[in-house]
View 1 (tube, rainbow, N blue to C red):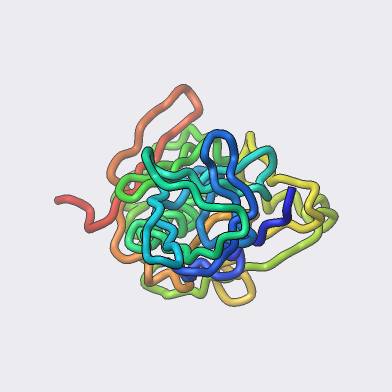
View 2 (cartoon, rainbow, N blue to C red):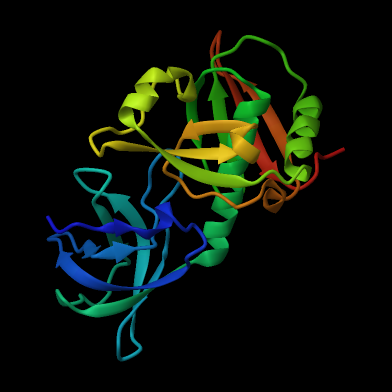
Amino acid sequence: MSSMTALFLEDAYLSTAEAHVTGVREDGGILLDQTCFYATSGGQPGDTGFLERENGDRIQIAGTVTGETKAEIILVPAPGQAVPAVGEKLVQHIDWDRRYRLMRMHTACHLLSVVCPYPITGAAVSETDSRIDFDMTDTIDKAEITAKLMELVNANHPVHRKWISEEDLNANPELVKSKNVRPPRGQGQIRLVCIGEDSSVDSQPCGGTHVGETAEVGEIHIGKIEKKGKENRRFRIRFGPLPA
């Protein structure tokens, strides 16, 4: 398999990028030498958008997924699209408005894990209504949680990335907040997403895309807190102010 560079790991704001086709799978999936398209992983949906050919034609991309490993990123064309040739040069264009909403939401999920420091049992990021499930029994007021979230948003903490070795992660197991899922290993390094100067607010393994400052998240609120079992609470994050 040809090596592929995941450009979004270093620059989440890269919405276009040139690439060469390295392969086309039997199912139509397109492989590139480098990509700014994020693949579905860690609760965050994969990017959509299009590939622009040298003659101006477009190949619409309906989704992006991983292959046998997280390092293999597959762009999934919409039905009826033309098939590019191996070696062909293309320009990638992600649906930036959708991606940016997902970046804001994913960052908001990290902030919620700071406000609610409980083991995470599940999560899903979407454009309008994201959720995190916590292993907890406490009763918490959604207005109180919303206020604490907005304090972190309005403080405009920097959001940045940092790479550590797998040995460093082994020595600091508290960095992993998920109760059931562990960061993928075998690459030698683990990517941390950090919030605050010197990671003062938060630091946890994550391969997703995030905004550069917490103020970019914008106004958010906890729309609902649901009881999902004896020791599980589901928090739903939504954009906009808390309804009266």
